[in-house]
Image 1 (tube, helix red, strand yellow):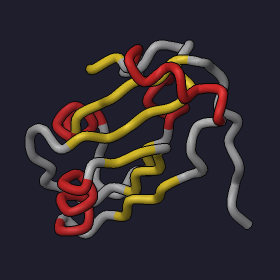
Image 2 (tube, rainbow, N blue to C red):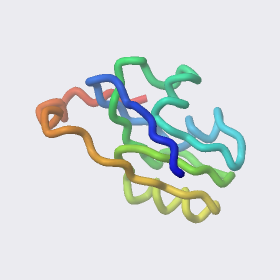
Image 3 (cartoon, one colour):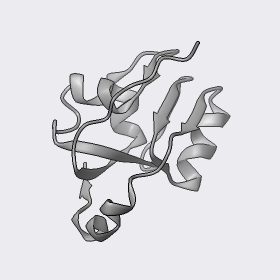
Length: 102
């Protein structure tokens, strides 16, 4: 049985793979909620995209609403898993310009 998470928030954010690598240990599961718990994303964020800046040297399971192609490649090459969740609701389409880079 797969556990379901509730994603609350209206804002979108991007996070780089090197930031994730610094704050998570090998084999850990990375989700929007765990990123918020570690203080890497503001509480108002409800959609996160993982980008490939930096390096990743450990296998992680990363569950996010978006990935760059390079980020997926890095995650898979280190033995991890990239899981794409359902995208943001249609009401967020106007928010593309408001994406926050971390």
